Image 1 (cartoon, rainbow, N blue to C red):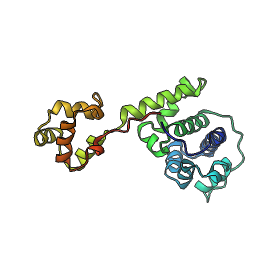
Image 2: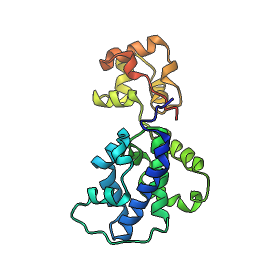
Image 3: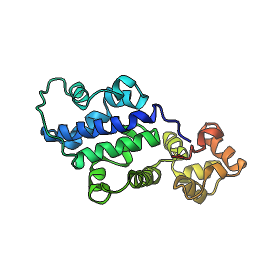
Length: 208
Protein backbone atom coordinates (compact mmCIF):
# COMPACT_ATOMS: atom_id res chain seq x y z
CA UNK A 1 0.00 0.00 0.00
CA UNK A 2 1.48 3.35 -1.03
CA UNK A 3 1.73 6.01 1.66
CA UNK A 4 0.77 9.49 0.44
CA UNK A 5 3.17 12.24 1.45
CA UNK A 6 0.56 14.90 2.15
CA UNK A 7 -2.92 15.10 3.61
CA UNK A 8 -5.73 14.41 1.17
CA UNK A 9 -7.29 17.72 2.19
CA UNK A 10 -4.71 19.42 -0.05
CA UNK A 11 -5.44 17.22 -3.06
CA UNK A 12 -8.45 19.10 -4.41
CA UNK A 13 -6.67 22.44 -4.20
CA UNK A 14 -3.34 21.39 -5.71
CA UNK A 15 -5.08 19.46 -8.51
CA UNK A 16 -7.06 22.53 -9.45
CA UNK A 17 -3.95 24.68 -9.12
CA UNK A 18 -1.88 22.55 -11.51
CA UNK A 19 -4.80 22.31 -13.92
CA UNK A 20 -5.21 26.08 -13.83
CA UNK A 21 -1.48 26.58 -14.29
CA UNK A 22 -1.46 24.32 -17.35
CA UNK A 23 -4.40 26.12 -18.97
CA UNK A 24 -2.90 29.49 -18.04
CA UNK A 25 0.44 28.60 -19.64
CA UNK A 26 -0.99 27.22 -22.87
CA UNK A 27 -3.43 30.12 -23.20
CA UNK A 28 -0.40 32.41 -22.90
CA UNK A 29 1.17 30.76 -25.93
CA UNK A 30 3.50 28.26 -24.27
CA UNK A 31 3.69 24.92 -26.08
CA UNK A 32 1.90 22.32 -23.91
CA UNK A 33 4.64 19.69 -24.20
CA UNK A 34 7.38 22.20 -23.44
CA UNK A 35 5.43 23.53 -20.47
CA UNK A 36 4.76 20.08 -19.04
CA UNK A 37 8.40 19.03 -19.42
CA UNK A 38 9.46 22.27 -17.73
CA UNK A 39 7.09 21.57 -14.87
CA UNK A 40 7.91 17.89 -14.26
CA UNK A 41 11.65 18.64 -14.19
CA UNK A 42 11.27 21.65 -11.90
CA UNK A 43 11.73 22.28 -8.22
CA UNK A 44 8.01 23.13 -8.14
CA UNK A 45 7.06 19.55 -9.06
CA UNK A 46 9.60 18.07 -6.63
CA UNK A 47 8.35 20.17 -3.71
CA UNK A 48 4.74 19.18 -4.45
CA UNK A 49 5.76 15.51 -4.62
CA UNK A 50 7.49 15.86 -1.23
CA UNK A 51 4.34 17.36 0.25
CA UNK A 52 5.84 20.78 0.96
CA UNK A 53 2.82 22.63 2.34
CA UNK A 54 4.08 26.01 1.18
CA UNK A 55 3.94 24.71 -2.41
CA UNK A 56 0.69 22.81 -1.95
CA UNK A 57 -0.98 26.06 -0.91
CA UNK A 58 0.49 28.41 -3.53
CA UNK A 59 -1.69 29.81 -6.29
CA UNK A 60 -1.32 28.77 -9.92
CA UNK A 61 -0.06 32.25 -10.74
CA UNK A 62 2.67 32.03 -8.08
CA UNK A 63 3.82 28.60 -9.28
CA UNK A 64 3.78 29.71 -12.90
CA UNK A 65 5.91 32.71 -12.09
CA UNK A 66 8.40 30.47 -10.33
CA UNK A 67 8.64 28.33 -13.47
CA UNK A 68 8.88 31.36 -15.77
CA UNK A 69 10.29 34.23 -13.67
CA UNK A 70 10.95 36.42 -16.71
CA UNK A 71 7.47 36.14 -18.24
CA UNK A 72 4.69 38.60 -17.66
CA UNK A 73 1.44 36.66 -17.64
CA UNK A 74 -1.76 38.54 -18.35
CA UNK A 75 -5.11 37.86 -16.74
CA UNK A 76 -6.87 34.96 -18.47
CA UNK A 77 -10.33 33.56 -17.88
CA UNK A 78 -10.01 29.89 -16.93
CA UNK A 79 -12.54 27.73 -18.78
CA UNK A 80 -11.34 24.36 -17.46
CA UNK A 81 -10.44 23.11 -20.93
CA UNK A 82 -8.52 19.98 -21.97
CA UNK A 83 -5.23 21.33 -20.59
CA UNK A 84 -6.84 22.11 -17.25
CA UNK A 85 -8.29 18.62 -17.11
CA UNK A 86 -4.97 16.97 -18.02
CA UNK A 87 -3.09 18.78 -15.25
CA UNK A 88 -5.88 18.12 -12.75
CA UNK A 89 -6.18 14.41 -13.63
CA UNK A 90 -2.44 13.69 -13.55
CA UNK A 91 -2.16 15.37 -10.15
CA UNK A 92 -4.93 13.13 -8.86
CA UNK A 93 -3.05 10.08 -10.15
CA UNK A 94 0.27 11.32 -8.81
CA UNK A 95 -1.24 11.47 -5.33
CA UNK A 96 -2.73 7.98 -5.56
CA UNK A 97 0.39 6.37 -7.03
CA UNK A 98 3.06 8.36 -5.14
CA UNK A 99 5.08 8.27 -8.37
CA UNK A 100 6.82 11.43 -9.51
CA UNK A 101 5.31 13.52 -12.29
CA UNK A 102 8.46 12.77 -14.28
CA UNK A 103 8.08 9.00 -13.80
CA UNK A 104 4.41 9.11 -14.82
CA UNK A 105 5.26 11.05 -17.96
CA UNK A 106 7.67 8.34 -19.11
CA UNK A 107 4.89 5.78 -19.57
CA UNK A 108 1.95 8.16 -19.90
CA UNK A 109 3.15 11.23 -21.83
CA UNK A 110 1.15 14.42 -21.56
CA UNK A 111 0.23 14.13 -25.25
CA UNK A 112 -1.50 10.83 -24.55
CA UNK A 113 -3.32 12.27 -21.53
CA UNK A 114 -4.66 15.06 -23.72
CA UNK A 115 -5.88 12.46 -26.23
CA UNK A 116 -7.89 10.84 -23.43
CA UNK A 117 -9.77 14.06 -22.73
CA UNK A 118 -12.74 13.44 -25.03
CA UNK A 119 -13.27 9.96 -23.63
CA UNK A 120 -12.67 10.54 -19.93
CA UNK A 121 -13.12 14.19 -18.94
CA UNK A 122 -16.77 13.74 -17.98
CA UNK A 123 -16.19 10.41 -16.23
CA UNK A 124 -15.35 9.88 -12.58
CA UNK A 125 -11.63 10.38 -11.91
CA UNK A 126 -11.30 6.72 -10.93
CA UNK A 127 -11.65 5.79 -14.62
CA UNK A 128 -8.65 7.93 -15.56
CA UNK A 129 -6.71 6.52 -12.63
CA UNK A 130 -7.42 2.97 -13.78
CA UNK A 131 -6.29 3.81 -17.32
CA UNK A 132 -3.13 5.43 -15.97
CA UNK A 133 -2.38 2.35 -13.85
CA UNK A 134 -2.55 0.22 -16.98
CA UNK A 135 -0.02 2.40 -18.78
CA UNK A 136 2.40 2.37 -15.86
CA UNK A 137 2.19 -1.36 -15.22
CA UNK A 138 2.40 -2.35 -18.88
CA UNK A 139 5.52 -0.27 -19.43
CA UNK A 140 7.25 -0.94 -16.13
CA UNK A 141 10.73 -2.34 -16.71
CA UNK A 142 11.62 -5.24 -14.44
CA UNK A 143 14.62 -5.13 -12.14
CA UNK A 144 15.98 -8.26 -13.79
CA UNK A 145 16.09 -6.51 -17.14
CA UNK A 146 17.66 -3.37 -15.70
CA UNK A 147 20.43 -5.29 -13.93
CA UNK A 148 21.01 -7.62 -16.89
CA UNK A 149 21.39 -4.70 -19.30
CA UNK A 150 23.63 -2.84 -16.84
CA UNK A 151 25.92 -5.89 -16.89
CA UNK A 152 25.93 -5.81 -20.68
CA UNK A 153 24.41 -9.27 -21.04
CA UNK A 154 21.82 -10.44 -23.54
CA UNK A 155 19.06 -12.74 -22.40
CA UNK A 156 20.75 -15.71 -24.07
CA UNK A 157 24.11 -14.90 -22.48
CA UNK A 158 22.53 -14.70 -19.03
CA UNK A 159 20.69 -17.96 -19.65
CA UNK A 160 23.92 -19.74 -20.64
CA UNK A 161 25.98 -18.37 -17.76
CA UNK A 162 23.31 -18.97 -15.12
CA UNK A 163 22.15 -22.26 -16.64
CA UNK A 164 18.57 -21.01 -16.54
CA UNK A 165 16.14 -21.60 -19.38
CA UNK A 166 16.04 -18.51 -21.62
CA UNK A 167 12.25 -18.76 -21.84
CA UNK A 168 12.05 -18.33 -18.07
CA UNK A 169 14.14 -15.16 -18.27
CA UNK A 170 11.95 -13.83 -21.07
CA UNK A 171 8.79 -14.57 -19.12
CA UNK A 172 10.13 -12.82 -16.01
CA UNK A 173 11.19 -9.75 -17.98
CA UNK A 174 7.85 -9.59 -19.78
CA UNK A 175 6.11 -10.02 -16.40
CA UNK A 176 4.17 -12.99 -17.69
CA UNK A 177 5.63 -14.91 -14.78
CA UNK A 178 6.14 -13.38 -11.33
CA UNK A 179 9.83 -13.48 -10.45
CA UNK A 180 8.87 -13.11 -6.80
CA UNK A 181 7.45 -16.63 -7.03
CA UNK A 182 10.49 -18.11 -8.78
CA UNK A 183 12.34 -21.04 -7.20
CA UNK A 184 15.10 -20.01 -4.80
CA UNK A 185 17.62 -22.01 -6.85
CA UNK A 186 16.75 -20.05 -10.01
CA UNK A 187 17.06 -16.71 -8.23
CA UNK A 188 20.38 -17.74 -6.70
CA UNK A 189 21.82 -18.71 -10.10
CA UNK A 190 20.71 -15.42 -11.67
CA UNK A 191 21.97 -13.30 -8.77
CA UNK A 192 25.40 -14.93 -8.82
CA UNK A 193 25.91 -14.23 -12.52
CA UNK A 194 24.55 -10.69 -12.21
CA UNK A 195 26.59 -9.96 -9.08
CA UNK A 196 23.61 -8.85 -7.02
CA UNK A 197 21.53 -10.04 -4.10
CA UNK A 198 18.42 -12.10 -4.67
CA UNK A 199 16.40 -9.26 -3.15
CA UNK A 200 17.63 -6.95 -5.91
CA UNK A 201 15.76 -9.03 -8.47
CA UNK A 202 12.45 -8.99 -6.61
CA UNK A 203 9.70 -6.71 -7.88
CA UNK A 204 7.88 -4.17 -5.72
CA UNK A 205 4.58 -5.03 -7.47
CA UNK A 206 2.94 -1.60 -7.50
CA UNK A 207 -0.15 -1.79 -5.35
CA UNK A 208 -1.87 1.52 -6.08
